[in-house]
Length: 277
Image (cartoon, rainbow, N blue to C red; front, side, top):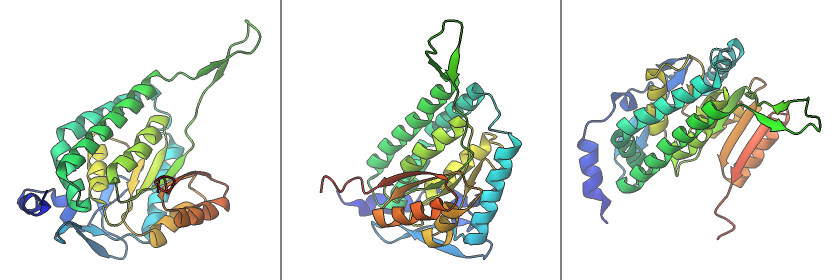
């Protein structure tokens, strides 16, 4: 299938002005420019056409995002909210994503060059991800453990880990982010998301949705930039409690090594296709 006519038509359609503002960092409940003023032009791999102008974050922006996430978590505006209320929020996120499905799918296609039909299928999975964790949060009352005494009730209750740093790849940009964002919010965590610098558009639109629906300031933060400038700060910072990274083995080793200094929790998904190759 020739993508050129389809993408040319897509480029001429109305797009979200946010993606062309150069002010796409989302820190402490507000969109803004990078501290340095730097920007990056995002181009569609299928035809080379520019599709977005986004902020290019640096270490200072990462520091600000982490500080916002730390404040939000420590004040308990989200972490101490009853789990059913957090679950209800995630269900509302799913509904809003369904309403804006076409807009999100188009942004994903323009960033990655994949067929629009595939992006639409990805959006279905993303919506279902938020619905799954929304229902799970509302239903989770802890796990009962047999204590060997009928007069003793032993229950394991899970608590949010704190501030989560999320570093995601270019190939399934929002789906990979959703697999991290939805469970983090369900658990009561705050987070800083760093999407791949080549495909950040849907992550920016996701921040719009979370903000529109009233997520407390600082719970969700977005820094669009490179791994060297932003990812390294997220991996080693003492105020980050967990770092979740999806990407290549070499970078995963660096993330694990950086996280070791503060003994933070680490989740790595590395080179998943390689065993098949």
